[in-house]
Image (cartoon, rainbow, N blue to C red):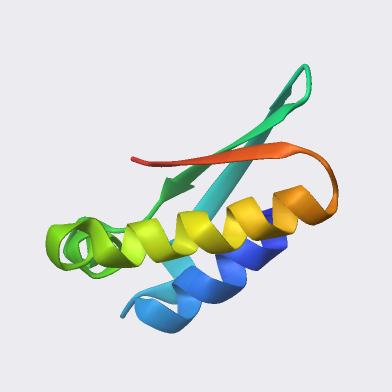
Length: 75
């Protein structure tokens, strides 16, 4: 899951070297914490959160395939 988020987000931002994803597993849930540079936060969230929702939808689909719950936090 971590690699999937990295691949998607690095394609969106201007500073792909500053993208980091921290993965935490709590019981049957995977929590991904995404950090990008201040200049790129708007690009990752998108207008009215559309891009963030799309990334979460992709993660949800990938998680369903593996029977795990995935959540994404953008810091």
